[in-house]
Amino acid sequence: MKNTINLTKIYFKESLSNSFNSTNKRSIVKNVLYFIFLFIFIALCLGYSLYNMAIAQMQLYGSASSIILIGLLMSTIMVIMMTAFDTQGYFYKSKDYEILQSLPIKTTSVVTAKYLSSYMMSFIYNAMIGIPTFVVYFYFEQISALAIVIAVFGLILLPAFTQLIGSLLAWVINIISSKMKNKNIMRSILTILFLILLYVFIFSADTTSFTDAFVGDIPLAIKIILPQIYFLYNSVINVSLLWFLAFVGISLLFAIISILVVSISYKKINSALNISIKSKRKGKIYYKKTTIFSTLLKKEAKTFVSSPVYLMNGIIGPILLIIVAIVIGSGMKGVSGLSLNIYAVITMSLLTLSIGMVPTTAVSISMEGSKLFNLKSLPIKYSTIILSKISFNLLLVFPFLLIAQIILWIINPFEIGVCVLLFFYYIISLILYVSFGMLMNLKMPRLKWSSETQAVKQGGSMLITMIVNLVLSFLPMIIYFLFSTQILSMGIVLYMGLMFMLNVVLAIIVISLLFTIGKKLFNKIQ
Image (cartoon, rainbow, N blue to C red; front, top):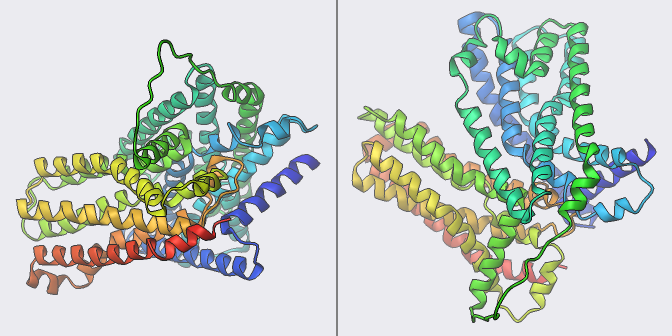
């Protein structure tokens, strides 16, 4: 127990200190306040949306209790989509495996400490939606001290289900990969396969059952698949200790299963994953002369493919591009006039949101780790290093963007001029988001990490890039709905052209900063 607590403290301190990449207390406090501000900003935005939903529920059914179910379902789905495949980065192929195995520490203690470290990130994501959900509910319904206590402890224990999903997926993927010859490639292939299956399951869920969940009794499917949410929902609206104890029991059961599943074959899987089998080349060895840029580009691709966590983080956005294009394109059939203008603006926002979901550049410097100093010692220009990282992200996203645009061209009724303008808007947005992510990672690199998940998911550059890209993506939609009369009078094409020019200006500014201030930041990295 003592070893578990000490390891958990170490992982927690490591996450905090490395996330802010500073030893200066004043700088750390400043960064902490900045992240608190971002957290509150996101929570307020989500809270406003939930507040409007609650008003609609009050008008229809005279109660806002269903807002808890809506918020908890949204939270669970979001966390599963964002963290389900990150758990394997904590448990498998971490840098501290060999060191920990040489110490007299039980496997369950190590796994439990890593589980709690991963649990913390899931809790933060859950809290972003969970806190505004309960605040909105208590605003409309009667408040009691016991209900508030239940809600607080409910938020703390809620990530147990998503952690269970992540642990099971990590165990299945890595136990299969550990038996293969090309382990890293197999891990990446299996991770992509499970990601696609997970997305298909989420997006093809029975929407009528989801709607029925807010009218009358909760469907049996939700009670069986998501018992944790069902128990917490009943414990809050009924202020029932019995329901709350059932919720605590199922949460602890999920946590125990997660830890036991990983612990049983933790050593066996990690030992197998750390063994690399190199095939012997037969015949003559030929050396091909290549440019420095192409070599760096290949290095970026190899790093991306060999890391399942990095791969998942960077491939989610491109996959969503295709899904969003199909959904929006299907919804635009038979639409014309004013509704078509609204669809055009929504298309701008949602596709650029997918493009800027998580650029690889936001974590590419962090993924270098200690190898970055070797790269800096080589006679390679700063511009060549940065352009190779940016080019890889552009080459990764562009094919998916082209396919998404073709889908929209085929099934939507936009004029060819609007389609071309939208396509160039997506291209300049992609350049802007990728360049900004690169600049933020130079400003806040995380080079000291024991698992790839820490480098990819727990860095400040990733969070800031996501927030800024989110705001820029929804800016066209926000401006349109605020000034719709003026925009309709000037014409939707002219409005799109102005938004395109705005992103061109922002891209020029960010790229200029990247090759001036960014170079100084790169040279200061130690």
